[in-house]
Length: 230
Image 1 (cartoon, rainbow, N blue to C red):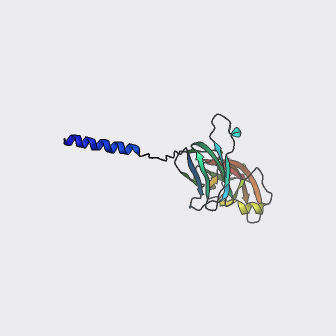
Image 2 (cartoon, rainbow, N blue to C red):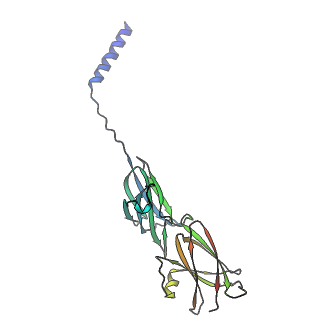
Image 3 (cartoon, helix red, strand yellow):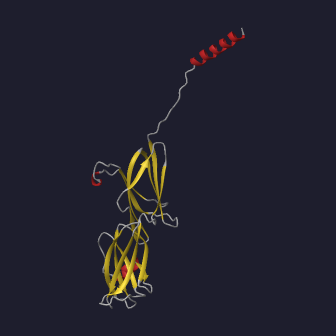
């Protein structure tokens, strides 16, 4: 008898629950948010620059891929592309910090956006992924090619293939260095993907253009420059 009573109560409860219409709101996201933050090696936000976003279309040349969005970096060093459909994207950035310009050397930074996930990317512009090193040896431009110590060298980033003939202006935006007793000069953290003009100068205001070299990121470029007496 007890079993029948229990079974009867279960059936009643089940029948009553079936009369209740319950609605459930289910939201399925097929997109995610993408934010990119730029800073230098000290964590200081980098604010002067733009970021362009492209779909990762591997079947076509990059020149044929449409531009999806372009945004300026804000005062916090942040670019917020908002909500994007899940998938793969390419980001191309170019910015200025101090007197140097930085960029993604191969013009592409692969980004994967996952549905329902907010993606935050931190870019350290001083990372060796974006910077190269110039290792110079300074010698005399004669038959002996002696090592020159204490040579004043100026390294100037060449932007858009143009240079100025005003050496005082070059001194303002270039990187200065002095060769050691072995004629060596190491210049680190130079943005890759650019060419650099090398000058020799003295305290009398005389200067001599020595050469120009292209720097690759994450690579040490070893070069010897030869200096005339000026």
